[in-house]
Every structure is written in C-alpha cells, then in structure tokens.
Amino acid sequence: MNRILLVSLILVCLLAIGLLGWAMTGQRGAELSLTSNPDRASVWMDGQFLGTTPLKKADVAPGKHVLRVARSGHKPAVREVTLAAGANPAVEFRLAEQAGGTLSVVSDPPGAEVSFDGEPVGVTPLTLHSLSAGGHPVRIALVNYFDWAGTAEIQESRTAEIKVTLQGRTEAYYLDEIKRKPKDAAPYTDLGHYYIVSGQWTKAEDAFAQALVLVARDSESNYYASRLQQEVEKVFRSQFNYNDAPRGQMAIVNAYIKACKECPTYTPYYGQALNYAAERNLAEQGQEIIEIGIVSVPYDYSWMTQTIQRRWGDGSADRWIERLTSQLKRDPEDIVARFQRAVLYSQKGDGANAVTDYEEVAKKAKAPAARARLKEMCGRLYERQKDFAKSAEAYSAALKIETVKKNRVPTLYNLARVLTRGERWDPADAAWKDAVTNQEDIETACRWRIEWAQMCVSAGKPDRARELLDETLRLTHDDTVRSRAQGIIGELKPK
Image (tube, rainbow, N blue to C red):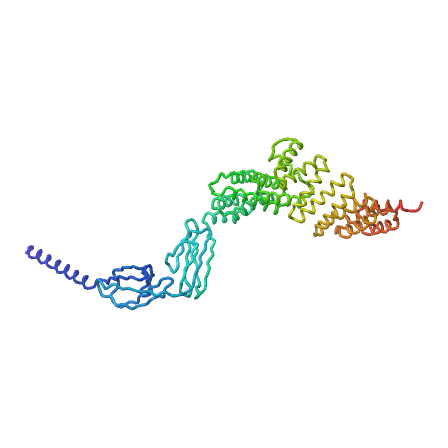
C-alpha cells in the first residue's frame, strides 16, 4: 500500500512540473531589437526611456507599443510596433537631418562633460549644430564641482548660449565658513590658496585682499596678521603646487593694491606691496602703489623708508641713495626708485635734489590727484628753501590739476601763505579770499582770517584788516581766536 502511494505522489509531481513549464513557455515576454541610422539615438517606448541605440530589450510585454527615437540635429521618429512573444524582427529607424538651431556651451573651468536631452555630447567648450527647436534639458558636470542643470531654448537658425561658472565643492565649503565667520580672515586665506592652485587669479586676488582688509580693520582678525603674512609669503615664493608662478606673484601684489585702496591709511601694506612689486619688476603695479600712498597719506612717507630697508637691507641714507642712483642709471624710467630717492633726499634735508626727483615723478604720475600732491610737496620743499616764488608756482600748478574742492582748500591756504611771505600783496589777498571762502569749518576759517588780517596790516591796509577781524569776532566761538582778534584790533587803534 505504501508503495502504491509513493508512486502516485511521484506521478502527480511530474504532472505539475510539466504544466508549469507549459505555462511559462506559453507566457514568455517579447524581445525587442532596435537600431537607428545614425546611432546613439535616444529611445522611448510608451513614454518611458529605454536607452540609446543600438538597443536590445528582453521581457517586453507582447502586444502593441509606441516607439519614439530622437537624436540632436535630426527629426524625431515615431512608430507603432506589434511585438510577439519571443524573438522579433529588428526594428530600424532612419532619422532625417534637420536644419534646426545651434547651442554654444562654455564653462569655467572648461573640460566639463555636457549632456543634451539626457545624452552625453562632449566636453566644454562645445558647439552643437542642427538642434530641434524647443526646450532641451542640459546638464554640465565636472569632477569636484557641483553639477549644473538647466534648459536650452533652441530656435531655428539661431545660436543659444550657455555660459556657466561651476562652483567647486571645496570652494563651497570655504564660502560657507565665511558666512559663518564673516569677521575671520582665515577662511579667506584658505579660499585664496584654493583659487591660486586652481588658477582662478582674480578670485584669488579678491580673497587675499579681503583677508588683508579684515586684518587691518577688524580687531577680531588682528591676531591673524603675522600668520597672514606667512601665508602670503608662501604663495609669493611659489611654495604651492600651481603652474604659473609669475601670475601667482602678481595676484599677491594686486591683492595688496586692493587692500591699500580699501584701507588707505593702513600704511604697513604700502611697504609690503611695494617690496613685492619691486622684487618682481612689476613697474606698473609699483607705480600704482606709490600713487595711492601719495594721495592717501600725504607728506608721511615712512612706509617708503621701510620698503627701502626691506629691499636694500640695513644701511645709511647715503648708501641707499647710492644704490638707487645706480638703479636709475640702468633704468631712468623707474618711477619707484626715483620716488624712493626723493623721499631719502627730503629726509636728509637735501631739498634741491628732492624737489628735482619729485618733479620727475609728478611728470610720470598717472593719477591727477597724485600729480597734484607731488606738486604740493615740491611747493613745501621750495618753501623750506625760502624760494617763495617757486613755491607759489608749485602750489598754483597743484591747484590747476586738483579738481576736488576738499583737496584744493589746504593748497589754497599754502599758496596764500607763501604769497604773503613773498610780499606779493594783491595775489596773496586773492588767495586768502579763496582759501577762507572754500573752508567749510567755521573756526578754521576764522583762524585763517586772522592771518589774512595780519597780511593786510603788513600791506598797509588797516581798514581791510579791521573788517576781517570784526567778521571773525562775529563768527567765532573760540576764546583763543577771539583774544587774538581783539589784540590786533587794539594795535590798530590810532596812537
């Protein structure tokens, strides 16, 4: 009995296996084989993307399906096919070219992979032709950078442009650090290093300049000054892995120039910047630095002396002048060396040689404000030599160059003084009038009126002096000024 039962069970299992095999054979999927001319066309079936040609797809549901094949520069093709279970004849599409539009894709940095309509088409810079009109998805990707995705609107017989600056993942990290700690110079320095290594020079200049500005302005970053100088020095000495060392050095000099413009009274940067510029013979940048300093810190050129010492080492003014003179014999157009020598002559009290060099620098200065300040410096040197005629000429020349009112007022005052000392009464009277009229500070104007009145007394015009002093008493609130005016009035009373 057990034997019969065992045989029955075996027969039932064999029957079940046969039925299952028959069922599977009868319901197997269809196989799709698809090609296109040209190939690498994108394929959609019933609205779902399958891949690119040539394409083989198994286990497709038998029956009717709608196939769509598209490739850039060609007209898309649509066809309905009926697929049977198992293998089917290959389906071939021949795509017709179309005129279409053009797309230009440029990325910074270049070399990024471009996908158009989901299909890789090349690397930037890239131009695609014969594209179908309408909106097309575009993706731009580069290792270590965030992808860019957008839509290109293509028009017949026109060129669409996509210009993209890809944001590096490292850059994004440092920018986020800067947002979190906006008054900390360190992230700006790190960002500057990143830009230097990646060859993004303008961005590097801006990042280092901002670090320099923060150190100069903000107490929270002052602690970082010495470290920043070390980091800048590393870049300037090419201690990082970047290909264009001269351009990296120029980036550092330009960063200092930008910092000098942002913080014009922070004199340490002038010396550091000029030292780097002179070392690499960056004459244009060197001239720009000294012109910023001439305008921003008039008459105080201590930063220039520091630069000379860094460049030539310890020594006396005579020794430095000797070296600068040799440099000028080699290159008479070296405006930096000439200005340095003028400063040294001035500090020595050698006004004649100093004024000669300042005059030459003034001729070559590009900024009108710098030329005006240099002419004024010449006026001051002539005044020390008691050559009041040449001093007046220099101050007058400065006034012809300078157009900004607030900058003209001190020069007007200096011109009035030297004309008075030269006893040129009528021009002096006119200069005093201009100086007092343009001086917006009432108390300063009152002090100048007293000097003007004293000139009138010396010129034999007591009535004019009394008018000025009476006006001074009416306007001033300064007891010292009032006392001086009353004293002069007392001296003017008939004896």
